[in-house]
Image 1 (spheres, rainbow, N blue to C red):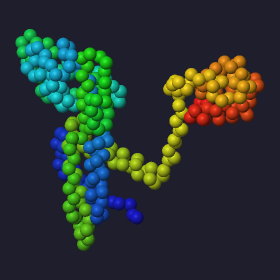
Image 2 (cartoon, rainbow, N blue to C red; image 1 turned 90 degrees about the horizontal axis):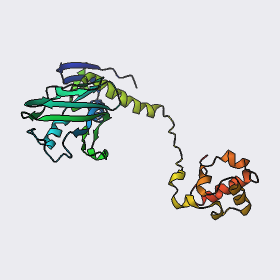
Image 3 (cartoon, rainbow, N blue to C red; image 1 turned 135 degrees about the vertical axis):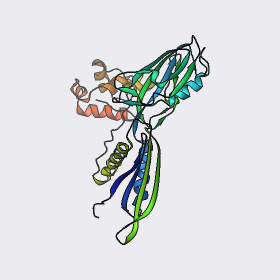
Image 4 (tube, one colour; image 1 turned 30 degrees about the vertical axis):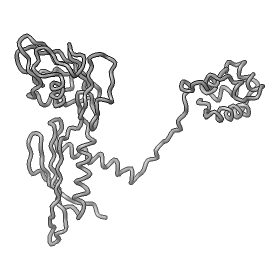
Amino acid sequence: MEQPIFEITEESKTKNYAKYIISPLAQGYGVTLGNSLRRVLLTSLQGAAIVNVKIAGVKHQFSSLKGMKEDVVEFLLNLKKVRFSTTSANPTKATISAKGPGEVTAKDIKTEAGVSVVNPELFISNLNKGAKLEVKLDIEVGIGYSPSEERTSGEIGVIPMDASFSPITRVNCKIEETRVGRLTNYDKLILEVWSDGTVNPKEAIVEAAKILMNYYQQVVSPKKVKVEEEKKEAEGLGPIGKLSVEEVGLPTRVANALLKNGYETVEDLVKAKRAELVKVRNLGEKSVKIIDAALGEKGLEILG
């Protein structure tokens, strides 16, 4: 099959929106390309969001803060709308420190170096005269959507947040017929992309295409997936790990040799190195195989 040749034309563009025409595409490939790009754009691009909030004087989200007109739930819903641009993949922190009277907006959020608020005009809360608002925020980078249930904290007052990391808010695909010369059975893909302002729509499409390429590359030139056998750690052996080497069916000679060299329990054997066991006096390769067989009956093996 010949290399596909088509053009990508930017038809219109605003701050958070762009419309592209991708044409001409072989019949059926408008749907193929449009649906795959749409899925990746909405689910697989990286973004930053608030994951934890701690408000001074507030123990949980179903409460209120003296002097703030909004209740805590409404305040948190407003915080979810704040969008961040970051140059780092590491978690960062931010703070809000405000006094009434007046409005608190996203521009009042103080971030660490490398992190910026892209919608500083966003309204967050109203404070009455004399009211104080002190907030600590945890910001993380992620993909897709992360419910608050995935994050637990033993610290009183820390409120986990549902986090939508995706920088793309909406994607619309439309397929129309187009012609090349006398042929009319070609597709024209109209792709509209809305972002939260943290990413350029064109750059987002390119990134989505790269992600798809990585998947297709595995089909073209598959790399062998390394599957390591799971081994039970000695720490998780439970009662079996406390059994003495004399209680697992080892010959008396082997058990005595192990005891004399400090291997007293099944836990000791599992953590032992095979090369060291072979060197133990009165043992050897044959005896180590006997130990392997005895451990195997318990569903265990020597880790080293």
